[in-house]
Length: 165
Image (cartoon, rainbow, N blue to C red; front, side):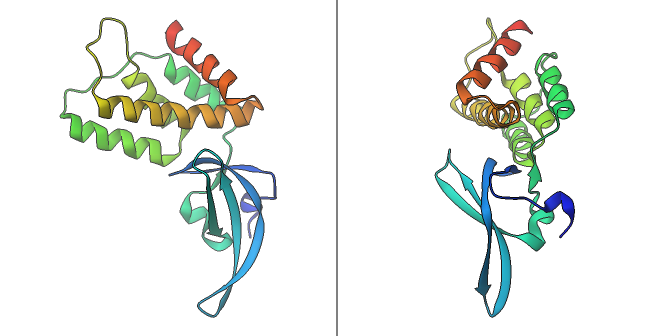
């Protein structure tokens, strides 16, 4: 096991398709006659526990929380000018979902920036709001864990950044 995947109980990690979780520990299970070591990760928001084979952690995209520098880049991205593409919504929605599920804070910030409801802009569709809220929640959770603050404070800070843009 490489050091970058040596997670211990209590560590916060990011699983790309589920967001921020907390490592509860490592357990050994016998599956199909094979002994497997598994990271046990709890996702409080979804009330879910995920078991990821230690040997497959990197392929699954499991990673530590972002560095402060990566998060600063993401927060800078939030304040940029929205890039509204003129392609069909279904195509853009797929691209936005892919960015959210990549787990990359900078890509997630791009989704938030592009879908942030601005004053004077026509009302968002239900699916636009859903994608925006999923991206916002994902970034808030990682920001809160990185800064060791609660989710409410993280939400307020990100909303201030968005309104200042």
